[in-house]
Length: 500
Ligand code: ZN
Ligand code: MN
View: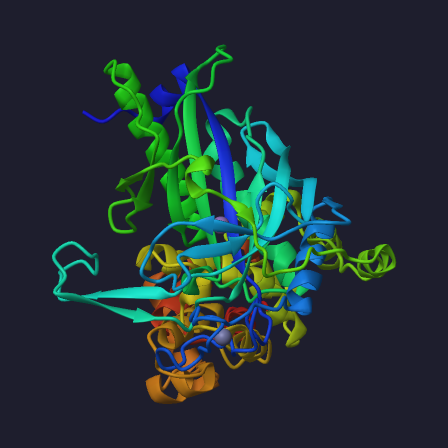
């Protein structure tokens, strides 16, 4: 019998540590001029430097340094006037040099923080996540294991290597340990990664596509008995690549650790891999210590010494913070707190903003994305952004409803059609033959039928008791399968009953 999450947090206190890798969107790689575009044919974006051929020498990409400083500034970090690259030595076939150029004891940015807010039982609550360091490094290539059932190396017949990604600039953002989140640990971690993503997007330094791996999170989790100040042993779940998975992976690890501890067993310090289908993690390799990597300063690269005036210039140009942007949008759109929290939680803020920018009324745009569309997304177990309905479709839908060409009910059928891939709202309307019944003759026929069936109610209305009309209008709408304009039905009905 698996332990419940409530049992876990009644007894243990989680401690988090989050490492996020971000691929920068520079045109060229970190130490050579190869292109970085995603999806090119394997091994077409390589050169002697990123393939580590003898005698090839790296040269630092200035734009990558600029992007990293921007990230550090946006995360309230100090920027080191002098830092160095180091070699991190280990073997892996997708890493041609057999070391990764990274930064070790001299990161370019350090000592920052990010504040995140989540919705708790006692209302919104803020948590400060302290940032230990932000450093630069290069990405590895990719291995593709062929022939096995799972895409893993075990059971594969052979492996293919693609070095296009080798040498793409990466920034690693490492938090200090995050204590004190209690039962909200999974939500806080998710909110932190979401906040980072929004900050990075605002800085325009990365395309932050978690599903393509340009933003990935390693989640360290340990448990200690409540009240104890001795840290437990941590596990590190690698490369979690969606916001929802960050939350699920941490929750799952907390339960797994608690089950081990309750059984008197030890948690092993190791890396683990998150499995999307089950929400569980499986064991990876046992965790090495920093000293195993034999870091040393890279003798091929000069130290990074950014000019103070340049740093101040970058600071002055920082964009609006996501938290400030959220407050501004909430005011502009006149959204109650609870609804705003719901929008952030459902991750639809960008989508709603885009819909509004296409001319839709903010309240209507919000209610479509948070209501019907979110409901379908939940049913399909997909994030809203991955459905085939786009802001331009919702803007069109809102416009069709406000012009009276669709009722709300018909518009819901159109949403369904767009999500099913039947085309734009106008195309769905045309193909499905959806239209508002505004032929008064057809409406009158339905009204007469309903008034005959509910003669008693009709009599009340005739006698001047107008609230009773609601039931009749509802019945007419049902009779016309939701295709009638309710306002017109009301008008005709009241006139028919001598109240118009
Ligand atoms: Zn190259
Ligand atoms: Mn790293």
